[in-house]
Length: 401
Image 1 (cartoon, one colour):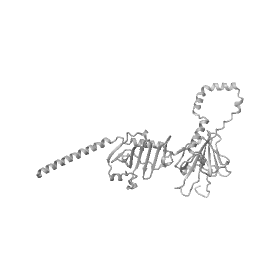
Image 2: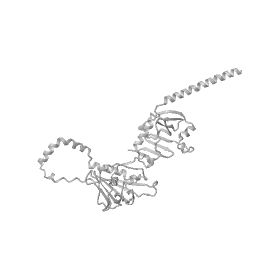
Image 3: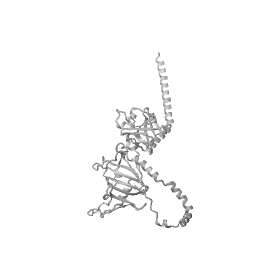
Image 4: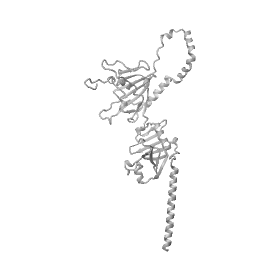
């Protein structure tokens, strides 16, 4: 073949190659442009999700939809924070694509998109893997979340990819607060009692029936008072309020071990606090001993039970016994048009003693099998001595006083 012919053919090949490159580049660019602003997982069936696993360098979480509530499987199936689960799944569904590019090895390590189970990758190269399953344990979605990206304009985004995909997506949402530890997914609020609903608090030593102290209200709405206060010293009203508000709400940090059987005894504690409510419920708190030596490792634990004793009906005033029936009937007739509707509304709103008892017993079944771990500030609300309710003595030698 003549050299001139070879050169001509080579020129044709180069032209065709160049044309193909620009056509493919243009198609890829158009594809990316078409994807921008679209939801990455718009077809995600939220109602079909029955399990979620979160696996990262700092820990792992297993969430399962139980018979009645979502549970943290690797925390002894304790109830999970349903609100957090809803927020996460909705966030995944509404995530929109900003940019896409190839998932090269360099990109994966730089954007922390390596599989967290990859033993060849270091922790600062690994992402967080989220897998969603249906009720038959079939995978619905499998994503790896990488670095977040902050825009100079104030916006934020996140790099992510499908676990088996070859494309990296920069999406508009940010998953930087996603927790990798199971205790962070527990339903943290155990109980929430308005302090105004508490009639009295009695503190006891061990199994003794003689209280160490009693805080009581003379009537609903009145300030609680310490019965038989010490002759010396002044009761600190802030500390009294602290005890009354320690259940409004009671939030936990974690649970301590698996649940007990209902027939198993509660952990032995040196003191217990009995909260008596106006509606007849009685909540008993058992603060366990703990170590103050190392605040980083100290555990502040409590157990809880709930009981019910029907409140005593207030005595009828003597005057009502001597009021003539005719006069009483006349008064009732005069006020009937004004009060009938309000009485009916109150009857609808008020719970019967049987309903309150059932509510207390049902809650007791859930509470009594667990030992809860609390933050120190929350645990300190359960003051277990009369002296602890007193104002601190002032140092008269201290110039600041």
